[in-house]
Image 1: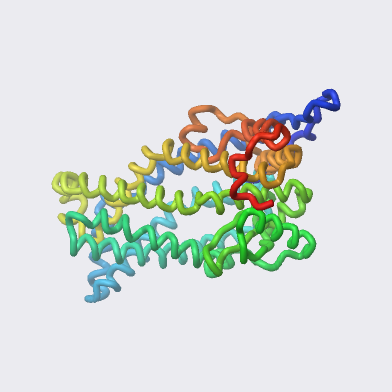
Image 2: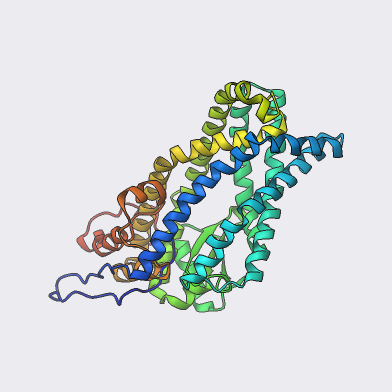
Length: 411
């Protein structure tokens, strides 16, 4: 759930005692709308950059030159791949550095949403580059081995392999990756921790541990999540959320995040994501031969199993993901709505849910009613206004109606 900062005090409508109190949807401030427009432009520029950068490496022949350098440095294929990836990744990192600095550091400070020092931003960026290089090497090693051994079915095998790979990544990320960026520790409020574990037990989540992460060194936004599998399963609260929300609001936020976990959204998204990867690779497989035949002189390679072809595969896959994004985002928005429903059913506190959404909306300088086209193309969460209104009105337990997830939630 995205974080927000309070724009207006929630208004309780003057209604008869028998009626239900309603939390008003706050209007976006001028500052919030300026941030909204800035983020939209940065999103569009990011999409353009995702196409322009790999195309640049392809049509200038840079990718082939990097491959030649890698081949001169070693006779071992794995070393060649690593050298290629390091040089390609470093150049890509440097090309994107001004944009990433402006988007991730300048704009966030400009709108008063970041506490991050430049040293922390730079360190995190270098760590992210190192982590992505390790993960990228593993992926490209498998990709080009499959291309060499199965030129016709490599895309299918790679898609199948991506499922256990993503699952493994989600298992190790809470322990080995996330702590590289922020400090995790036990929850300081033991009484609150006990209540969190009780609510988790009601949701059928057993054996999880509660962590508090120091995100305030980076941001003023709020967040919480449930992630990991098996022994790495954990419930995580950002310290910013613990400072800004009261206990009933936190219980709803936790209920929402637990909803993702117990409703199987993690598994469903893994499968959907891997299906999208498979589709992207298949399209790259179908289009690559014609593209290579037409531009081999400029590309500097004549086979897809040449490591210099990586920008071509990357470019086509990015195009497919862009085209599929509206459908994928709609599916994620549906999951978010159902997690909201689960959170309401387990917490049963509509006022706390609505005020939590207001705080989350405001702390991110959010627009409660984004433009329909931008919402369709970009957003993977329901409109904040819709979420607040749903929190106000969804009360089946008060009418004696069955709960959608009543069989999951333990009494």
